[in-house]
Image (cartoon, rainbow, N blue to C red; front, side, top):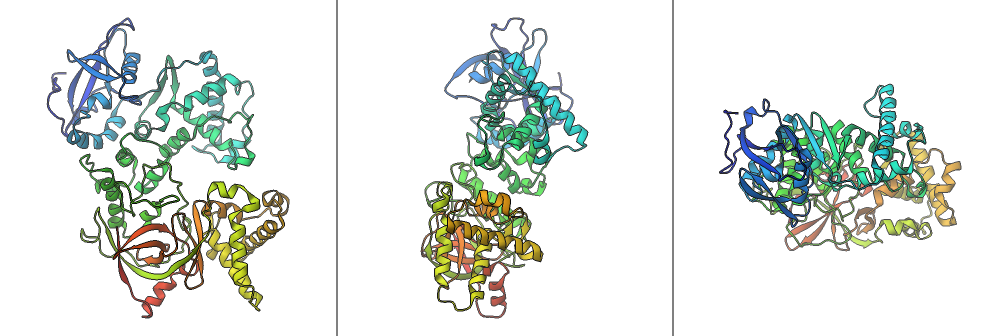
Length: 593
């Protein structure tokens, strides 16, 4: 111990951390006494400690503990966690963020937050504190839960795979003795604990060498908890209509635990990681970015972002956009912008900044499909990435202007799409048909319907790019679309009809996912597309260099507001770029604010 600095005065640097020693006590009611001391970062591998993962709790509910001989205020939840961890005969060494980092110091947080990945991965193990458990007969319920986990683990190990698909999970027969009411209630309350929804908890458990979960007096294995969450998530039907209120999965909200388990199995780039973590929450919205950096597998992404708590949330989020564009010369990051049903300029954000902190906004499907080779800009990339073109206030991008929006249809919201007799597609299809009433050539109507089918799915059938699919796949796609149109106009429930008549149906499910949270629109030139719910008449469709899809922009003086992605079928093969290369259209600057 002589090698360590034993006082806690002065701010920390990036070269050291603090640890907390909890002094032993044989009696639970005894006052909690501990000390803080410094450890050089280079020495944490040889110093045995555990890292605490917990939710701070209500900041207004404070209590005192004795630390370094002085009274220190902490949240009640932290006090309870430290008491639960206290041993009777020897000290226990813990790292806990709220007390080991000076939360009042932006500079100390800025140098310590980037170390948290190393702190948690270097700990002997991570201890998760879920709070107190007041469930009656919890002991018997825990036994059943462990039987379920062991059963699932055995099947997974026998399969020889670390992960299984939903078909395998749905085929698993868990003994009914295990899936009793007590086990159901135990799991329902367990996954409802606030810990599962906090963004910081993801890296704390994902990076752990070993982990246990403490819920009151009970100890659970993280593997058991995550194994069951993944099983429940896979056996719950995707469609609400197939949901069974009496099934074992009913009422157990385990999506967060399942997502964390998935993140642990696959480490991704920054944008994909942010997407995976979008369902979680953070008290400080900047932590929606800073709290996941240790999970990112692309080191260059992390190195290009500096943790700085002196910046406001808008600047932090803008930093991500700028880093992505500079690093990859594409506008893929703009696909993550979703303004919801109504654009609002209030707050800290520019129009082109994704609001990763706002779960109230419906996260629309990004376009095109991940496997698609379509690109409105072909191979044109973002060419200029210096400070004069990309900064926290604006993006100056090059591109090509297309047509203005003349008509918009009803937003395809979840509420609007529930009633199949008034489904938004009915109005859209009727409008397209009216546009071609005078066509003498039925081929033109067929071509318009084919464009419409591709538009409503953004050019995809489930996992396949329609434009690149083979002839049979294309025919199945268009056939299922026309059958859907027929059912729609005859008032037939298409979801029931396809069960027996369309085993290879490939239109409807993808269309519903793609169109949710979007609007159908018409352009000056007579073509149509789908775009953001917040778009309106007078917006303009553009192709920006580095962007795979067209975009909707709103003129704002000499600049533009970024509204979101669009799909306009005739632009998806890069025809506007071809027109530019032939000298028929000219590139221009678009200043996005």
